[in-house]
Image: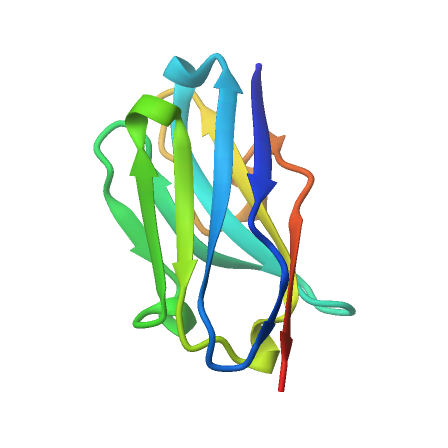
Length: 126
């Protein structure tokens, strides 16, 4: 089992920046990928950015390139999502997800993940 805890969400003004954290615990050696998704009210859950746990390769949604950056601190088993130039449309609940094993699954598809955090709310005011 893997447990995920997100933090860092808050109310921020448009143009600002923030860092979201996703701390993993439990059987972290089993993790294959950790990914950030977001879901705005009334909308589908969208892929934002993901990272291969073993080699650190990062993947981004086209809409996230340029303003979002995913990184990790392996010693802390923590993955970060840095967001710059925040816009009101970035307002959403941001969740991290992880999967385990060694076989390929599409990184941008929510069904690829069996472990989810509780989410952290980001609200961007205009």
